[in-house]
Length: 324
Image (cartoon, rainbow, N blue to C red; front, top):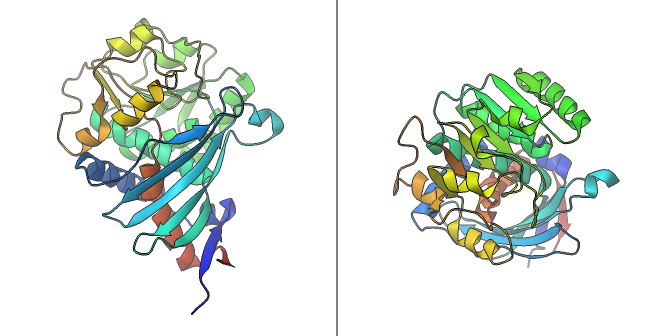
């Protein structure tokens, strides 16, 4: 019997594979369409919580249309940046859907960042105004960057209004957005200034079970779209309940997460992004609608992107082959 091997892809290997955001967007959008048609498999993520507001989650999923099956083992520790470590870290195990044999283990950090930004942009494609130009970003870390990267692929983004509780982080973020994307960036000293007048608002702080939200109803303008990738950490309950359409990437997972103590003030009526992408229910219907998609981050996102990275890495001869 031939020796079975697994390909290990480090973070450097994953980045060198050269998968571009437009390809990630297409893969994530098609995944949501498959999900909306009931053709995917994904149990709710389960996890450990070793420290306050920290998590280590197991996230399995299967997309039959692409034969992508596997699991992400991912952690988020909000104190890590003070230690010089990333807030999010983890690994993806990618399996052969025909045999179940693991084919690859790859770093999840880059994939998590890119697929989260892509999920925001896909939600915005169906729920934001197509002429959206101004993006307000609250939380100027990795997600603040990847969300703008994805949004500018689908929208005529010309300006970013950035806020972070650490002003130096906002300034560094502004410099990076200017240099990488060529966009106008204004650093705001108050969160309200980043929200008011923005066509799209992205909040990207740490996930908090007991947040102290600051965004008030009067800040979030008519016709705007929001993507809180940090759950409800920034958003007061009256704002959430006042939006015209409130969606999430998976209603079942949101309800499960609510049993763990999150989402105390979300609306009663919640739309599933998969149903919107699949055309089962409408997205934005009026120019003045205030819309929101509070995406939780799905294992299906990761399984949409993992095969792109694997195939590109193999084509470029990247990674380390290890015996099983």
